[in-house]
Amino acid sequence: MTGGEFVVVLVTTATADEAAHIAQTLVEERLAACVNVLGPIRSLFRWAGNIDDATEHLLLAKARLADFALVEQRVRALHSYEVPEVIALPIGAGSAPYLAWLADSTKRSG
Image (cartoon, rainbow, N blue to C red; front, side, top):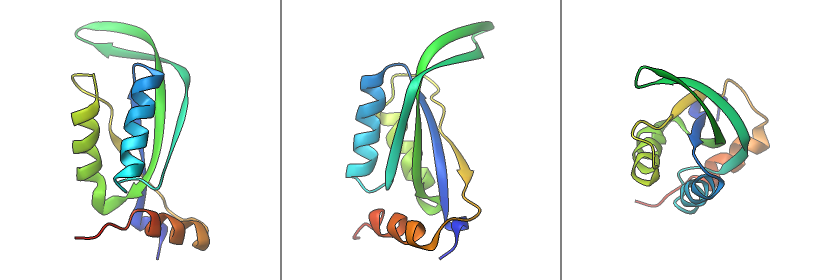
């Protein structure tokens, strides 16, 4: 098992409640082994021709690279934003026991 099989998926949300709901769902459905919820954070971004300055919460979801499309689909279904951030950063390496736990925690039947 190598780190390359896994990703950290970043998702920003408008509220702590939305972040908690998405995090809980991803872990319950074994789409993520663990989701850290950070925030509030300050985000500055361009949207609809304007520069926005917003308070958000950031999710760091540890997941299988092979499941990214499912993670994205689930986040988009639960998210309040028209275009939510759902991006994956590769895990290049990790401790063997942690990667084994991550694999086990995201194992789904069927």
